[in-house]
Length: 281
Image (cartoon, rainbow, N blue to C red):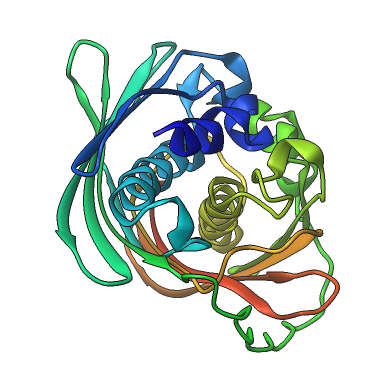
């Protein structure tokens, strides 16, 4: 399973997180992640994008092992993450288990927990192996309204350790919609040179959450992400990314936010999804 270990530990993004492959087989995988301030939100809480990254990395590890090194490239065509509790200044582990192996698809279940067994996140994933197929024709993403107002909160996003380390910045964040960019930088890359799926999920997660904040405005509120759904439509390319999110429904403290991630230069779809966000006002 050396090719799986290389992808986890030698990809610039995996190395930036500090992820380590503990075991991998055609049936299961375990990834360990020590605590680091660089992966945190304020208060030393593990960023939701890191937990989502571990879920995607665990699922892909099993799929790569099950289908073989020659089956690539791979991408996570469906991912459902439920966030169960917060990890505060503590190491976590991700355990992935194969549910079903098909000819080019693997269905995998992933649990992220603290080292003492407290559940942090649970995910189900469908990973696709492309077996050398030509690159996908990614659909164009229509631009949003074009307004550029980061509001009172947007300019301070970069002060959050994990978000700042990804080079994520807010260009717009008011009126229930958000537009965030993620820099084209080495620490966001996969082993192939494109953007790592984990970095894409971090951008999607963050932009969806910011659409919720754009709906209520800045305040001393408590907030969390109960759930994230994402589809990565192809192995992510290199380059700066832009994410558009809008709150499509609010039910008291729950915000349903749609997100699309595209290449900033070509405007073509990389990932799409929904972030269910909770703000207690």
